[in-house]
Image (cartoon, rainbow, N blue to C red):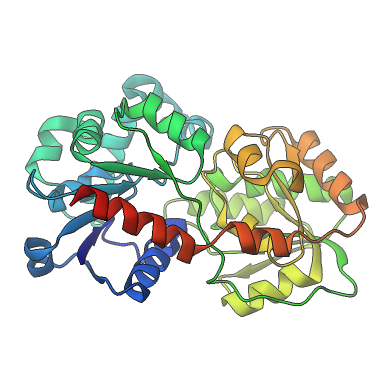
Length: 350
């Protein structure tokens, strides 16, 4: 079977969680004998199935919208920036209040165009705008894939999607397995791109209150350099900025430190949380329904907007007895198992 993938054009230039999703799903489908192409005009015309990633970026996906008789599957990879826009700057807060969430997303598209980051969006997107473009995609899709049932509920509420979403969690085969450590340092690790959504500034404040070392792994988001500078200014001598690191080195850090904290303002999965659990870390995450569904009793939860709550969750994790969930998550989260389910979705549409 020939499958054509489409997503944002800078998915490899500015990698994120959607990059990993796309790469691992592609690799797993190819291992099952499928031919998979990405952003290829010739392949687009010949593909049996079209598969989109990142429903919130319709300005890119509409370029690759297939004819109505061609099956379309969408990985939602839901992200909500409303809360971060409201607290990033006065300008963003005012723009959000004036335009609303969908209008704000439309405004950001044009801002990226004027900065030369992206080319002009297709005419269909210009005329429809953000909300109606998203609804067009959901109406045309034969199947929708989410990482959890709570994400599916939010997608249905946001887009009015009529079909029942298919819940397929991400996998962990991409991440090196490390042996259980004999000792872990009482320190906190956070692996994520540095941006307001990931909430590193409050995490820095929480670790300063606890007087525990904090290690931040990840590059600063190109659109949030001011936030990165605020994080640097707030950091004490106990905060280390590592930048981006290879997976093998990240795995060793997760094995070395006792706690991984990702108190995001919104998170569909939090792949670094999954990786940390697979590397024998205890994890702190935001007390959101999606996170509770994914991790259950295997995580310590906090209210991400309250530094005191983050502090309390980290304190509980640091004082908890060592406990590894690595064998559980490596059984439960699998790209290969997900590819088998996606394969079934494709065949049901043909």
